[in-house]
Length: 477
Image (tube, rainbow, N blue to C red; front, side):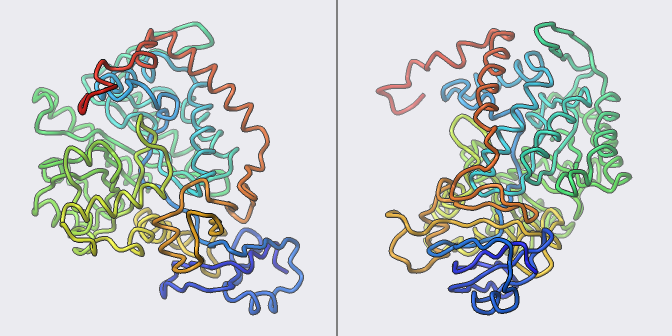
């Protein structure tokens, strides 16, 4: 007997046939999908389900997957008021010198809840900035992050790694209002990352995974740090292979992929790289030949400074997933906004409104992303045997009517607030657009207090209060 049947919806399966089933249903038992078909078919084979969810006038889809986000960023999402340098300076100060474990626990809970409400059931989260602000100097930060994500109930790949040198790195940890400053060698970061894999990879009933990270070396990086950077990258890549976990780098652009492969031989099917803007033809071929995956962040600042050739890479056979790079001063974790941005971003580049069809961008946040992260045997589509990560999207709203072309409406007109139900591992976490865990409001109050404390500790109040002088009345900052 099925535990739950979601019925009378428009089921967008994302299965190999890309079936869209009108008046469709999905049956769930023991956390997995046991039937997908018309409501009549599923009801006949599972007549006594314990719970029935009426999805009339709703689309039923696999939960979205976000291939690149940053832990910590939700706490500082407005820093700088549009000044990118002020943003980065504030992030560095607060992450490395203004935060304790409670900061990272509360941020993880808030970010996971934000994604949950928007229908993203699986995400990648870097433990910090991905460059000079990785908070992996102490296992406690990883522990509290993972515990918070586990309590919310979503899936996550937690990316742990080390900051850019030189080492030892200057860090502080706050215990209450007491500050402890410390110099952290590379070996400490490496050992914390290894312990994170041993402690959390496969945890929370399989919902949590760990991946490893090393910073990207760019042509503009200090040349005296080059050999140290490559040595550390080789060490972390070797650790990822030894532990059997994926490897990630954040922020690739022209020349950096070729340099990475020449100096470390790091590319492979267990690797994904983010941004990849203005990369060369040679680098595109390296990605395709090695099976390396790409996280395309169409809404990120990197995509303003350069372009990720996502359509060209896809045509070459590279697995490209769509990611939000959330959270930042100008964007949330809403993948609906990101899909729309992705389509228009590339259409403007080619001056061609036929580039990046609606169906392709939906694949990039579901089945393509699952394949890129080696999760497609479990999630990414609504198929019998897969984990029951399911969302519904309310189509019966003024901005979504009339009831034609449901896939088109989901991608082009829906937004995160239109998500009605969210199920992960067969457990209903959002119903009728309401988060069922009623403690989230208390969590947000604690978030505010902890964010204020971190700002006070680092003296960064101006980054959250003062607007740039060209904020109003000007066409440029």
